[in-house]
Length: 213
Ligand code: AP5
Image (cartoon, rainbow, N blue to C red; front, side, top):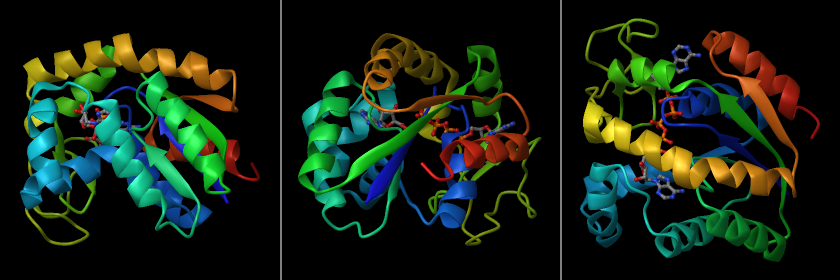
């Protein structure tokens, strides 16, 4: 079984692109951020553990993240697109070990390259649905204002999209997550993709990068 990763700073378009490509590539989308937000909404023990980290824009501790991913992987019968994971070198090492134990492999990682000033502008006007759909008030608005096209649930602005928290998330990305790329480049194909173009152009590049790997 071959899995893939989509990498990039907050607001780079990872979730948007994952929704665009997973179905056509026969992959299951696994976003650790989505999993944590669902746990917070559900008021579970995991949700209570991770809520403060999400609200502050800090990384959830590695052992918590790895335990969630390991538990999830056991139930996957298709290739997975990891979104927002791994975010530390410890997580990357843990992932590679777990994939090997499960008879899986990381085929490639695509890295969306987007400048900080662009992601800040994207996040400021993002609206999200609990089903995972993502909108932008100017470039990708829902058909009916405030409501999800896919599931007709109300759209929300994520708590961690408040400007002060976005700054913290960008700093955490630069300090703790960007170095993971250097580690990954030594062990797996990492394909840099210009994420500042239109959604459709980026999607085409991702298909070209992942098809057949
Ligand atoms: P997570 O949910 O993973 O957030 P993130 O990585 O910060 O990424 P985002 O979801 O903000 O952005 P995105 O790249 O998916 O962009 P999107 O497609 O929405 O993590 C949240 C938190 O959970 C973390 O801060 C941490 O606390 C915790 N966490 C999660 N995983 C963890 C881990 N592994 N370890 C530790 N902690 C973890 O697009 C953004 C906007 O731009 C949208 O409005 C969209 O419509 C628009 N847009 C997208 N593409 C384009 C384009 N090409 N042109 C114009 N607009 C675009």
